[in-house]
Length: 303
Image (cartoon, rainbow, N blue to C red; front, side, top):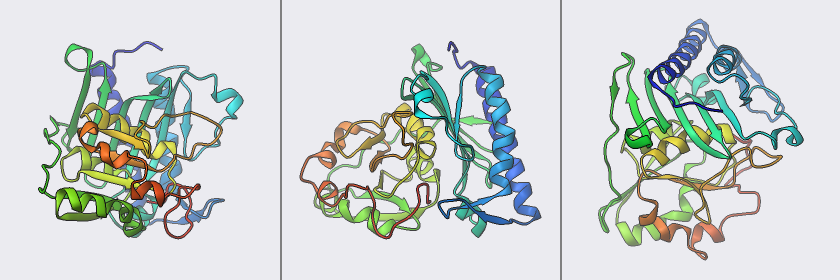
């Protein structure tokens, strides 16, 4: 696979996501009919329609590059393990939020090379806000990262540093299991930073809040899938942060038979400043179970 993610490529991918977003909103206006998948998580016509729109566009952008998508059966690991490059697609992340009438649902598209995200895009269809990152497209061959509103105009993301000691810290967590997600971190954080503010949000919108400087940390111990996090990880990596397992190692993708992620901590900026979060013996390590669950059982990808 050879691509430089030039302006035409970027524009085509953004337009593809926006076309899916428009289709999702059209379904919402007509009325949402809900079904249940085998894991009891909800699915709607909007999930399937968005995926049907996006898949051909991805194949056209990068012919021959396979796609791992939420609403399609994954290829067997014996085949996937041969892939050096693949797309990861969640055509409608936050289906529960979509059904409930919340604006906090997203379209997530990522490209992975040798297990590492090299491109990430998250669109919020209800607002038209989009955040994207392309490795190799920036100055000197580095990352290019931007946000764009419904008018398509691009704006740089804010340069936000880590909070100073005693300066307070902002956590964003799942709306459904937020208290459990944050509990393992609050003691250590309050000792260093003083006040802790907690914001609940749905879907990959949480990664957008980190990228836009509205939150500092997103902890996640309940299950997620690779298509939930790869786009957000690319965006945060472009900004000097990332998505890390509890040992402090960046998550990797298409890494094995299971597409379920381990527990993680996503950081907006400055991995080196948060090293204490990953030290053995800290509460998030001792409270983590082998299943990675926090609170009541839930299916992967619950917002």
